[in-house]
Length: 375
Image 1 (tube, rainbow, N blue to C red):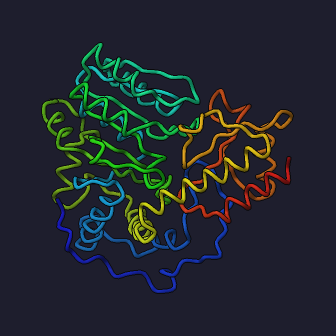
Image 2 (cartoon, rainbow, N blue to C red; image 1 turned 180 degrees about the vertical axis):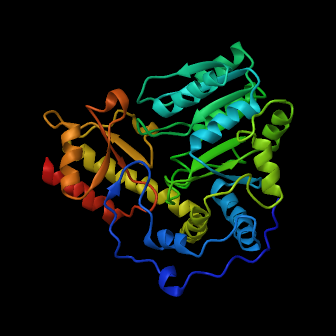
């Protein structure tokens, strides 16, 4: 594990450290999200070598703060990639044959396709789009067959569904010795997640969602249990070997050349996140979701997802009769607002508001007012 007491590089000039509170967010796709100007500007620091003392100091400074975000005392690693690479790495590095994939939308289905592509025996507990996975269905599946791992997508971005991750993980622990592998790409730093308390073995999050950093980095945990399983697999690939990531991390660096400029942005944004506080940040996202839900109910917009399963980071909505979702998305674009269209087969009927990351109540209210002007 890298030493945590190494000094960080010199801070940015004061003019760049001061946030511009006048920034109005008009970008509401479910990722990538709006990035604060001071975080963007952190990327223009002079380039440093990724094996230099300066970068090692920067890298070492990240983990204590990342642990607070992931709520873990364990390793938090970095990869320069999309989150999908680390998902595939998990398939290759931790499972020999049998895995259970919990699916409820396009991105949870990706876990299943990855494991099948890796030649693993992948079964599914599949629920219809718009529903969350029932932990009791997981219990039944685990009583029928032994699995080496269970995959969960915490926040299903395609449908705006938040799965009951804590309850699912508890069932997995009660019924089996399976690893719990979690896609938290669009939930980390926006929805409550407790990696250690909930017994999660791998938690993956891209920087471009609720972390509000430019795309290019993946942050992920890798438990001792997962590492022990990985050590028993003779063929873990090269770029996909999560043990190599862990060992290089503990030596104070990354496996390959990282996105150095994006690491600088992450450094600045972690300070902003922890200045707000995790509890406050989670509550802000819940408040944004509640505002969206109240507005939608008043105007006849409906959620495919039931109340307990609605995501705090993205609202998937169906407009009232007579209003075409794609037309609404296009109309907002003409007014300078960007929202997400529907996903997959839901594209003609739904649109998605990404109220995640740095979105403030005033930003959301401006977007909702713009929608009002169109309907």
